[in-house]
Image (tube, rainbow, N blue to C red; front, side, top):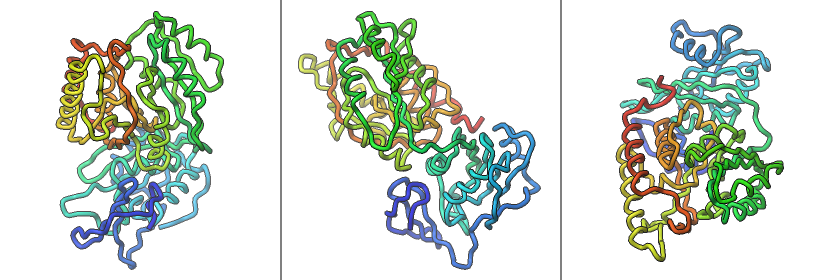
Length: 418
């Protein structure tokens, strides 16, 4: 058996659930279900059902006004290429033997920019539905759609199903990564980072480096301008410093890659960890990856001449990590790591407001609330002290972190629920 999402061949040992055999993909978590040989779960394309007001409203919200509508329900048929203005698939994706092939056919049949709406069941108290071959959750259904040429994905949680809308996109021959570098007053480390970053190559992946320079006072801006004409670098010059979060948010506006990777200019992190961080996304196993700095030890900051301060920072990190895990039912070890790597599509529909280091909290929480499960990968880390240039304000920033954590706990859950 091959996983339709990530092509993984390894599934967890089967377990019985109310008369059905259930196994879970060891790569992405997609669930495979046994189907009786007499059942016919293939998908057909036919007329729109009578009770379709909810689905038509969702398609209109994604731009469909009039034109040809492809409706998929339950066996196969040939489809004309680029012939439809929108597509509707109600509880058909999880019944197909090959969901990826089905999405490829629908992708080819849609016009560029056409919306797609699919519904997939949520697990009920009585278990999985009859005739279903697969079970997709919020993560795996989005991974599948991204893999087969759909983007701008929104998921709406209904009582018994997920209502997913997306837009047909053009598939890239090679994936592209946008590396966002926010820099302010880093004249000692910025050139070292940039030289190492330009030498760094990842097989099978194109890249763009987006540098956001926030009008430094130590000569960093002049150093950044030296890279202005490099074909792989986009240089954004801000008129004044507004905080790291604001700079990263500005970088998002200029990112055109399939994947976004956030990189600091202070040399605390190791560029050799890129491959491990990117692999789960490139192999369709994860939407969102965090590079955890702990490696089993909570004492990740070790300042030779400021041991008391280092202990205080470590304890603060443990407190805020525990708070987020409790508030949002997670098990993260390092939500505040700089190494945040994710599909750019994860940003779709989200609005960010934080400008300083509270943006680290806001970004992770917004992703978690949107339904993404962060995958944590251990990375190398050597912390620098305040004497070496660390910019966190101990008597200001923690209060903004606490405010953001509590505010987002009470906020509307996802863009798709609006």
